[in-house]
Every structure is written in structure tokens, then in C-alpha cells.
Length: 268
Image (cartoon, rainbow, N blue to C red; front, side, top):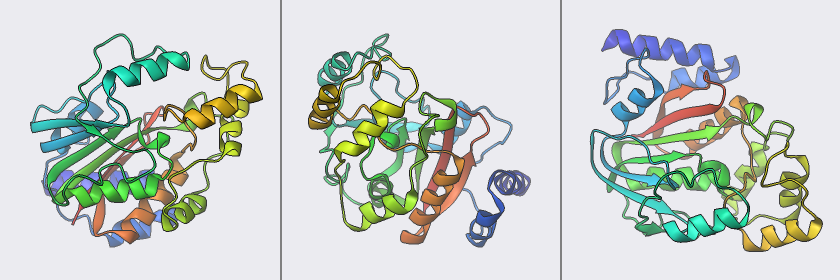
């Protein structure tokens, strides 16, 4: 166990830029509640960390694999049939190959996503390719940490914009998101939508869109656009702010597979 922990800490320090290493080391990553083998595939790491009573955010038709979960509830801003219709309307059919999950927790996109869920009641909150759709990602992560029990896990996967159709866009300024968190702002503005449609690389959802289409997408706010985008650096800035605002520590961070950034935060 100590050997595995040392490998994880060394791995984190290699991945994290030097200006973040001091903060991570100060968190004293001395214990893990679950054994992580750094040689495992990402899928196995997720399985080992995501245990007990779980909530998955935004699964659509691609739910995570949680063999050690005792229960799984799915949360989203839409019911499954509404999600399918919204995706079809914007011209995206990438999720239609499999059955959509049954969503039992419907949340308002302009409020904390799990506000109706009791604090300290779940073991794991898992969110894959969901946080980049949130208008207030810091507040969302803090809400997830509220819901998990002590030593519970919030596991997040977000696309690395440098390897997606968002690569031509500027990475979101985390100071801006911190201001949104402090003001409890859960809305977007029309200029943010224009940035998405104008600066996104060729993609079926964003090709040949007029200003009228942009305004319509802004008014409908289906939650399926990447309004804010992340790379390794601003993701670490976001995580560090969340750590300062909560009693939590980072357990895992991996940006080595390019397409996605993975991180796990444990509530203390």
C-alpha cells in the first residue's frame, strides 16, 4: 500500500506544474481508502474508486462501469427521452447507438445540481463529460462534495480542449468562474454562445450557424454545448480553488491520455 501511495504521489508531482506541487504536497496524501494501482487502466481505477452508493451525472447512453457500487442513481437536466430529442434538434446523434439511462434525479441547470439530495448521503459522485456543460462548475463540484460522506469520492472526467474540436478556443479563465461561484451565477450570456459557435473547429453541431441560430440556442439552453473549456493548467487551478473552499484533498489526477482529464477529490 505504501509503495502504491508513493508511486501515486510521485506521479502527481510529475503531472502537476511546479507552482501547484507545494499545495498538493501540503495536502499530505498519506492515506487512500481504496487501493489504486497506477499501472491499471483508467477504467479499473474508476471502478476501484467509485464504490458504494453512487450518483452519475449526465450519463446519457454511456454510463460508467461501477462493479463495486451497491446502488446507482442517474442525474441530468433532462429525462432520457427529452435528452434524445434535444440532441437530435441540435443535430448530434453520437449518443444514439445505445439505450439512454433512466434518470431519476432531474435538476435545474440554473441551480446547484444536487440541491435536493441530502448532505453526507452518498459514497460516490461520478461525472464524465458533464462539468464542461455547467454554467457554474466550481459550485457544482462543491455541491457534489457536500453530498458525499466523509472519505467519499467525487470523480470527474472532462475533455481536454487541446485535443477536441474546441482546440481553437481560449481556455476558460478560472478567475471568471470563481467570480461566478461567489455570485451564485448559474446563467450564460449571449457572447459566450457566440464564442462557442464562431471559434469551435468544424463540427456538425456548430457548422454554418447564423446569428439567429446562436440566439435560439442561447434561449433554449439545452445544456449540450461546451460553453467553458479546459486544459491541464486551468483544470488544476479550478481543483486548487475547490480544495481551498472545502475540507477535501485530491486523490488522483491524470492528463496523460490527451483526450480527457481525470481527477478524483476525496471529502475529509
